[in-house]
Length: 224
Image (cartoon, rainbow, N blue to C red):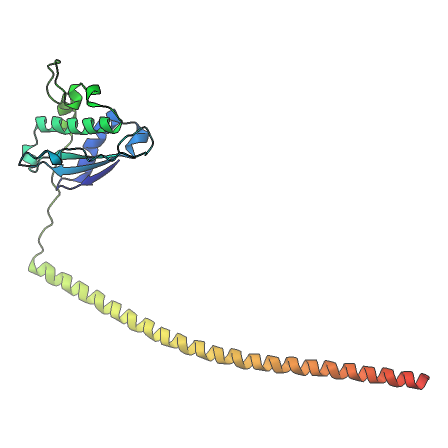
């Protein structure tokens, strides 16, 4: 299951909370196809941030959709047991729709339906999700002047080392080019000598062959 976090809450905590609901709503084979987007809940009552952004396509594993959005309050101090129940309702509701269930098939408080049961809204998610913490990401500490100066010294030292390495490798590259030219000239000289030796050997073989032919011809004349 993939979690896309658009908030300042810790992603691993949101994933743990969503996984608790997914273990009850989705099969193990279906979870790997699901993508959950966490957004902040709108302060203007706009429902667009709570609508499931679902994608209908053939993805297998018995799923009709594989992506949806979930809204969460911006201030962690306002996340009460009721809001956790609402989070559970959103997750369970959207996961059920991903499995292809319709609203008329989800007449149960766990999907946000009160009906005639009289059960609390979002039951039983409020109790189940209360044990999962929801904390903001730790803020990065602002570096002091001394820390910045120390970091500048370290970076300046690394830059000097990198420049020295560049000079060393450039020298090696020039030396390598010289070596390549030297060995190319050597290979050309040796190749020419080899060609000359081959030509001499061919000429010597031809001379011997001609001599043997001449000897054979004279021997034939003497026999006649």
